[in-house]
Amino acid sequence: MANKATSDHRSGCPVSISLDVLGDRWSLLIVRDVMVRGYRTFRQFQSAGEGIATNILADRLHKLEAAGILTTEPSAEDGRSTYYRLTPKGIALAPVLLELLIWAGNHESTGAPNAFIAQMEQNRAAILAETYRRWEQRDPTPLLPPFTAHGKSSHEEHSPKGKAKR
Amino acid sequence: MANKATSDHRSGCPVSISLDVLGDRWSLLIVRDVMVRGYRTFRQFQSAGEGIATNILADRLHKLEAAGILTTEPSAEDGRSTYYRLTPKGIALAPVLLELLIWAGNHESTGAPNAFIAQMEQNRAAILAETYRRWEQRDPTPLLPPFTAHGKSSHEEHSPKGKAKR
DNA sequence: ACAAATCGCTTGCAAATTGCAAGTAACAGG
DNA sequence: CCTGTTACTTGCAATTTGCAAGCGATTTGT
Image (tube, rainbow over all chains, first blue to last red; front, top):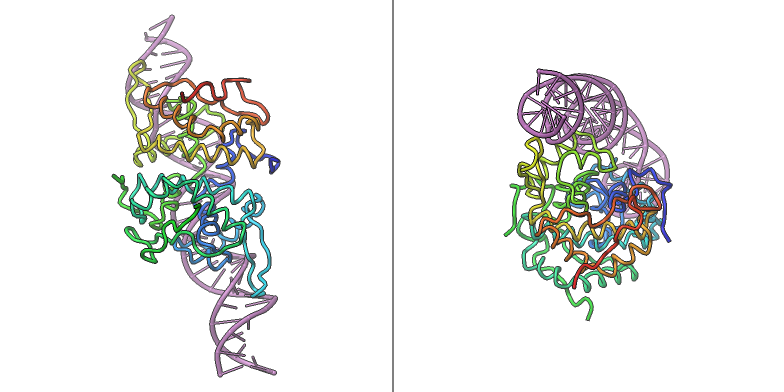
């Protein structure tokens, strides 16, 4: 079951190990981009809004791949592109991202409307189910819009939750 | 409602903002120590197992305080000590830590037994309720043992979940 | 067919962050 | 008092980050 990395870890504590793998400013943002925005290429990650430098992006993509969170496959449509996709271990980060979203939404000044956050909080299971469904079916349509500026999403009234779950 | 920090943030995305505040190798470990191990003093954090350097620890404690996640109060028993405590914003990180724990428990080789992780996964609500209760009542007894080495906890059969809830 | 643009990187280099070791001021216990 | 402890700070070296530029392999436009 448990995937390993021959421990170069600081301790056996699961939380600590999570942070050994994901504890930096960029890794989880990349996972977010693949998971909820449907991004698949280097270029898309690069222009994701937070402005990651290309050397760091390349480094993080390799580390996430080495950690078994992402896999790559050559693009069928464009020979220059590589598609990145979440592994089962990667999609399993959905609850972590959701809780981070809810936490910041409730306690920081974010670009996401309060009503939106409240809705996510009340429909955790449905949102996670929809996220998982998208992953299984390789559905690349964005689940959430990029909340770029403070105060409103970039697509203005996107489809906050849609129908997810029944 | 939303607490703010006059945005020096990379974007308005809640996930991104969470990572601006917590996205490093140490911040969430400190929160873990306060939340589930009942640690309250500088010394306790320092000898927490992962071996944080004192300058970084001091820096992170100040940043967490500035972010409204921790508060300090002078120790009544010992004039040299300061007690650190989670704010409401800080205790609200419980679900994030729990999901990180479950994720690593399921996908990395950790010091926590599989059965233990499975139990946490099935009793999320009860564990969060107990965590919150401990915080409210300032109960400093450890909820979880430090999973120091790979394979077993340091207290060997501690009290994995106890009675929480009900 | 050919030139220009695009994609996914790599390479240098300066700046910021981290980690390590050694202090230091305030307090506590004997 | 005198010694140990607590919560830090200070220097300094090593690592990591961010910025800008470059580069080979396609793909697109004409």
